[in-house]
Image (cartoon, rainbow, N blue to C red; front, side, top):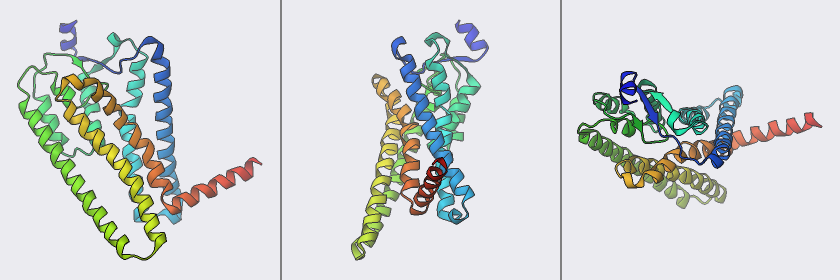
Length: 270
């Protein structure tokens, strides 16, 4: 088995550990999450693209977020659902497919230096063939090697800390500026809108920040592998599903357009 695996560069991916009784409920749950994420994000993109009164820089900026969410969800969920229906001994993936999936997983979390990370990984020889993760990512790939992977670990940790710190500081300064403006403003409507928008944005940001950091750091602690796997999946499900609601429905113009389309649909149905 091992010789055949190495010769054809076939890997065995762990996927989700589910009991036979929970296979179909888990599959249906993942499918519903995927459908909801895709429909909500595609609807937001189509709405902004087709409505001329939404052709503003702010709304075009909103299009980048659902595109990224569609990428992040599609790169793992279809494969994950497919593996759920397979026996654990039949969840094969080619090495190149695994590298490709790992690349887009890191594109989703904005790892812009992933080319260097990938280069550090594919230079390593492989003595293992099992991906101990529900899907492929950089850390899972370099764990296939029996060589010294200290460089990969150090680079991953340092880069992650730098990105997370920069992100946290930027968000903190932005919120300080918003709080200063709200404090000096006497408009209750403006302050209420700012609090409502910022609170929902902060909630989604904290979910992405904590889960993203947890995935990276827990890779270095094998005893917490189950927590890491659950966190990594939630990172690709929860934020992409919440973002259209937070950034779409919180925007007045988009909310009004959706309400208008909904009223038209009800009129035609009657």
